[in-house]
Image (cartoon, rainbow, N blue to C red; front, side):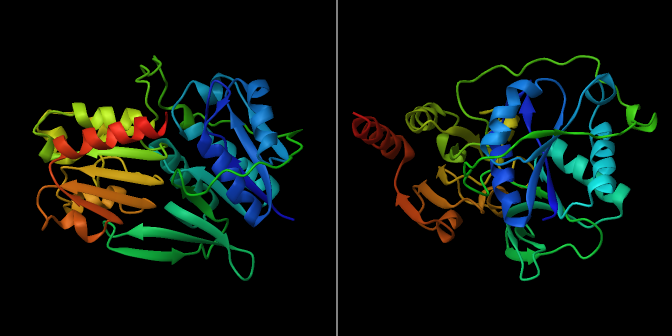
Length: 319
């Protein structure tokens, strides 16, 4: 059975949920092998084994951790040459997509980004599902040249536990001087908000122009669900919420299990960033709002009336 390389998404050895999802997907295609770059491998091994990693290729040191993403692409390129994997799975975040693009060039392979599903085709090769052209179409794609390089969106698979050996495997790579052209001079830990990361959250509650700048009720409802908070472009352009929380074609693309749009009209710019959500609920005073065209459930009403009631109901259900 061919190996499937999975680039581990972690912070100091704390493995993110996206890695568990990718290892689950990898088992559909072959034998999962984790590629761990950085420090903290001892902390990560238990989680990697828990989700089926049979091998772990680990690379650390300033040559790979002291620079931007180029060294990681070279590590993966060396492993592709060494192992001839069935596919390489990478988290579809800004860093991951750049790594994937560099890797595709180095290995002369086809690249698919923002996949929301990956399955084995009739011949065993990966077949992906993507939302394209600002969410206007859903397509199935496959790589026709080289090793399939696939960047997968968070929440594209439910993590499934299994037993893996997580055995140490050797990797021989020398990072080139060209890959060390952009050095990291300073790194600061992101300030904790108490809420999940927007792109990884299973539930996202977003507010738009209908909030009139008051996100209090949006945040209260999100907190009752343990959800992340997003915002439309209109809201962030008006200065009502940080740009880092923008959901849309020019912001972050999310694909949670549940997406709640409160006071958002549903312009194509916003829809492109959340249309692949599994379940979509909209709250809007305008019953003709475009957002209602793609929702699973719609509430015509004032978010300042609806959200507090919903928040109370969630809290009551929790006891």
